[in-house]
Image 1 (cartoon, helix red, strand yellow):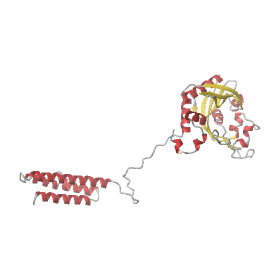
Image 2: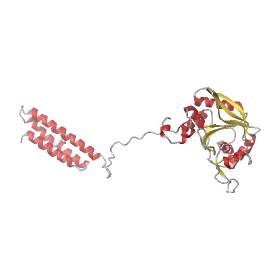
Image 3: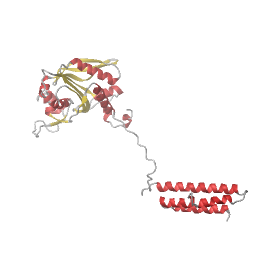
Image 4: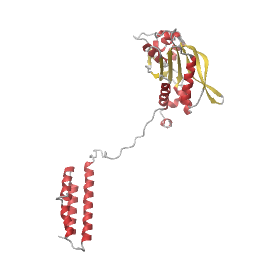
Length: 337
């Protein structure tokens, strides 16, 4: 038979059996049959090259290489097709690349909270957590807020049970300050204490650009021997400097809080025209009655506490003008951070 005709017959037979192979095992048998190194049919056809005349060799050799290349490529394609998982009944090819998912990022408030914890951690303060649903003892009584204090008015708090109604452990409310955590920590830990608590607090304020009924607060507490207001002012100044990236001035104004004595409002200078000072929180020395309520000896230890608004710092840093943007769930706003 003509060598070219034999090569054409070999090609057609090999391609037919390759296409008919139903699984990898059958395909391997076809490969050995046609391209096997020892007994494959291609090995037999290769001997034809030595028998053809000198003038025919270039044509037969070229056709031999074409047939070998095409059959080898068909084997590779079929192998990849058999190795690919079956297409689902709905027409989904699970081998195709998936739809890329964009990576999420932390909410700007969460970024601020993580940075707060990192900065205060470098000052030796550890983070402590507490429940957001509190009892009146931890939210008021242990903080030296008596029953007749206006801060306990039901209209100024989110009570979950009506005040004065016996409910086993007493009325519950959403905590109005993170100072509740300092009480829970001091009940369990003996001095020295150096902690911060960062979390949500709730107050029924009218919602506008600068107020919300839910916001975040960082409470700081340091108790030990000979703790002074000078240390309080230093911690606040260094904290603000680390967060804002530049030095700031701290000013204390006399104020009143039931759980600190003396108490101060804390102002910081932002070097803005016509607005040199901005109030950023309250602070003071822990009231001796608060220390006594958790079993500390106020004659032996003293301490300071401060509370700062997380939203206020975040808004200042990023130039945010409306606190409502934090809870708007608008991705156009969130993607900026």
